[in-house]
Length: 461
Image 1 (cartoon, one colour):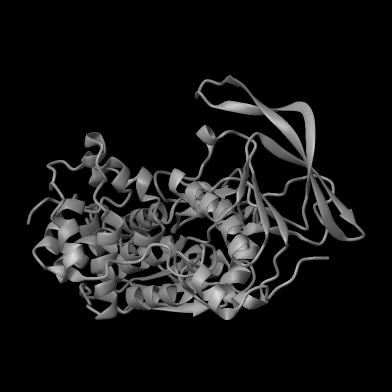
Image 2 (cartoon, rainbow, N blue to C red; image 1 turned 180 degrees about the horizontal axis):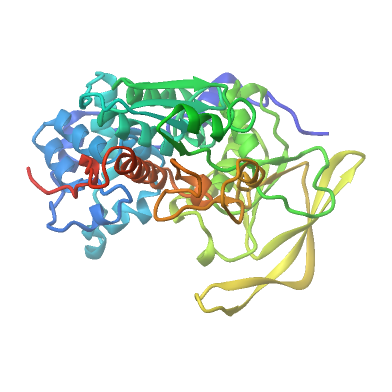
């Protein structure tokens, strides 16, 4: 059995898990980059942001050294703008839409500029928002992840008292427990949660799990409205022989353990196979390599054209020395005793495109075998279908079904984020939280109530 821990020195762990996207080193560097911006009218970068951050405006504010104003512009649209500047797949969102791409020039480094002003705001504890007078209403939120925190902050700004129920010991959701440590540290995530809740009117009850410590019925009786933002669960099962052998683990659990413990204590195989090609798969593979695995295979049943991760993320895995295997799917995990020793894979081929243009993978009839001592499952995440059914919520393939953007089938109960959409980006969850807050306010205050975050931002200097 070669799964072990403490493969590296403390200095090596520190180097391997250092910030992969370092900030601007000087103010002049940030100003130089900000002044590259063309400040487009009807900017495509803003349109491509799920939270509609007014990108030209916040960059113009940096260029004129109005850093507090820049942070306010960002946080007005995305209260988790600091975290999103580190984890957003910007190459397929704002930076991917930058007009410089059309000129075959490097796009504006929007994420780095966003990080510049938001981290300054957090470091200096600038409180950029004030709460409106109390509306005399109370809302319960289940889950202190991006959707829950976004909803809570929006409601608090409008004078609503908010209580968040979180099953973990810390807030932040997958930002805290499910993203590579070299992107965001647990310490940063804790600072971000504290910064968001510093507006006041938000309390978090940790170690309170829906279905065990609390029920929706109880929350309905005690609050004017309930917002569900409990995310999704562990990775999908492979449903193949050998899946229960020692050495087979879930990517979310692997990253959770890594984020929640000393790096030197994390067990990792010497020869690792990661199943999947999404962001979580990349995070698991690169971190296994950085923990000391000598060989890491990324196994994906389609081709690079269909991969869910971005080119930038794939390049991180390649630079870390991960081996990419396209058109392959796990068929069987073989063990010696209770320990994993080999992974048998089917060679796949793609069929004809369906109506959406996507080609489904099919077994070709050939197989190959990898020598491995650890298999990490990262082929998508499972919704909490049992919880959804137990709490009498309308079920949409295991996810919470909603009417419109956030209203559930239960009275005064709303939902958003991964528990509704099955798992998207952090920035999508933030927008879902804003949408949920808007629906709640219209429901408990007035049908024509309008909150500031619903108003389309205007461009000005």
